[in-house]
Image (cartoon, rainbow, N blue to C red; front, top):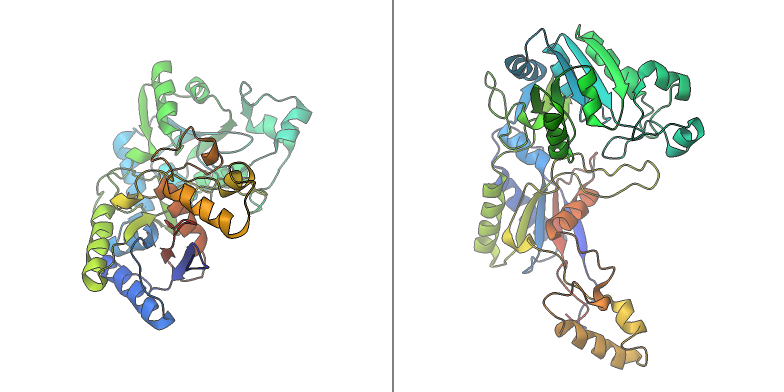
Length: 397
């Protein structure tokens, strides 16, 4: 082996992005500047990731609370009570959407899932449900019943009481609001036949169940702001899904037309360096926090765009399995050589091979996007671009 280092993930600093900036050029220039200043070279197989936020910022893909309200008014009448099913518990992700919905409606019924939302934000823990004899799969709880049983629990990390928080937002918009808790989406139909689904990854199933159960008017967050409203930003594929609070009166939407960005970055990096790199735009990673239990993935996808080399799944053998089984009788250089040879000669598809068990056969762009998200962070690191080197290397290289 000629190298002692495997995969390396580096956060790359970039300027603050503004609307109208040439985002592909900034990504390219930032990576090449970092390579020059820090003394490293790009290599074939390197991966460049850019967070979806800087792409959306460059596009100016923003919408105001009034834009959201206007689209709600275009789809629902002022006489209708709108049932909001399974919104996630988030100040950043849903509060601004809720404000826009409430501004465009006269009455809403919010149905929260419990004990947690779909991405793992907990209202209460499972032990509390067991203690009170509550079955979350069958029992519907009114706010009053929830308070009698569980009081006023706060979110582990944010310290928020989301029931009171969401109720307060709606009331500030002069919208009548009721909050209930249940995990069967069809229970909302006892309150209203007009529904806006707010879940992210389970939305297709939720809409199917509601439609089959008799919902008379049915939309999802992914259908709000799919086209410009009075000059607003928009997202054809995901609507309000993947949006973030920008200001008290606006949201940043998930970016559009991302494929053209990654294709251009890949092409121009090759033209400038002769190196064939892979490129992706990434959003939230997909991983579970062991304390707060949040899955993190509030975006509709980890990677809205990626180049072709990030298709597929890893096809790797487990070194410790080979060392403990096939080559248990070897050590030192003999073991190294045997492992390298086994890697070089592995089958193209190791799905049913014992030596591949436990090698995390997730999609490459989900794995890489999650690594990018963990590397760049979401705070003040100032590294919205990530360079990953050695990701496709193996022990045999």
